[in-house]
Length: 250
Ligand code: GEK
Image (cartoon, rainbow, N blue to C red; front, side, top):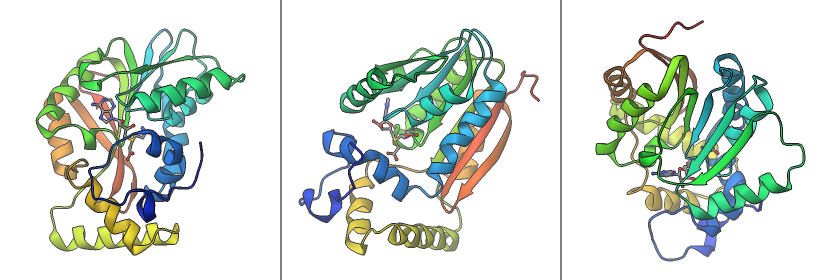
């Protein structure tokens, strides 16, 4: 755990699609911190948002939870009674490690974290006050994204929120080029070499398919979210808060 990510220096030699397996789990916290600009800010800020919108006796969902960073941030920030945090990931290796971490953590806070292996496309969303997809939707098949958003909107209680963080692509070719360049510059400051950056980009090519901000907006509106606000951007990484159309939100 918490080892340095050197996967694209030498460990992965032949080109292959990126998968969330044991090798990735071992380096995941280092990998995501050095790859997503602002990750270490985004996670606790989701805790701040959850603290405001979590409702007593409801569920908080962390969909595509990996090692549960968002679940832990929400657990630390939310003190309402009867809150259950449901953390779901399709990678058995991720969930196994998360469950081990939770079992070893004697400081577990108020809301229980239920960590389960599963496909978020098949996870029922019920009695939810906060639903978080922190860089997960980008890995879901394009054709299945709308239905997932529809189910989330239906499963959210009035007054609840969806937090959606994503890598995005830009409609303007020039902006796409620049933001990508700046993101790669960021990765270089984090110690990744040009070769590692290029190899990782190739590995993610068929796996991580970013939408544009406009596509996200349209999909969220279609699903029944009335107000959508971007609260974070770091180059081509953004995070949005969406309110259900019929919600009364402060
Ligand atoms: C964090 N949210 O640390 N069902 C469930 N999980 C899935 C599915 C699916 N269909 N597809 C992909 N995943 C985390 C980071 S990482 C983002 C999320 C990244 C899972 C996949 O196994 C992986 O753990 C996660 O989504 C994406 O805040 O690595 O860039």
